[in-house]
Length: 162
Image (cartoon, rainbow, N blue to C red; front, top):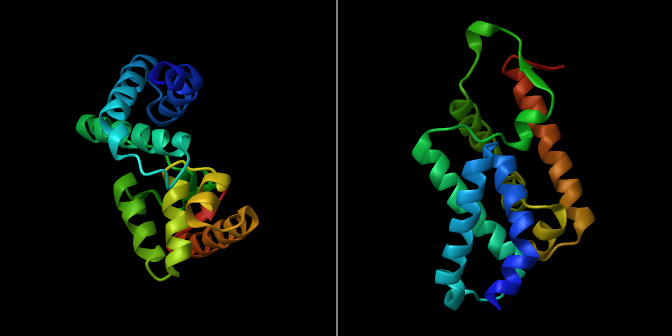
């Protein structure tokens, strides 16, 4: 069973990890660590999400743990939404900006916060919908509204669209 899971998902896990760290060698190591952690955690798998979703959450945790250890940045989707700092003197570092985004999201409904967090963690709309027991279109609409809300907040703070 473990070999079948490895054959079915190792390439996807590697690509996902590589998208987070942009380092081929580290991605190989973390892919191996992900499957090792999966083997250790298999008895605790409850089946609330698909096996693939569960495996990717392990990959995410393994990768973020290593990146925190190495103090590297992880690039989130919201950072690629087309905003640049209008005034170089006001440029926030990455962590401060992410903290600010999370703080702004606290004013949003719980469901919107959950979707925002899961999108930042790399989950697809389909995976989020399954996990939160919503339809995919609802997840897309809430994510779109989240991005509009954050664009407005970023604009108020001196960011502008490219």
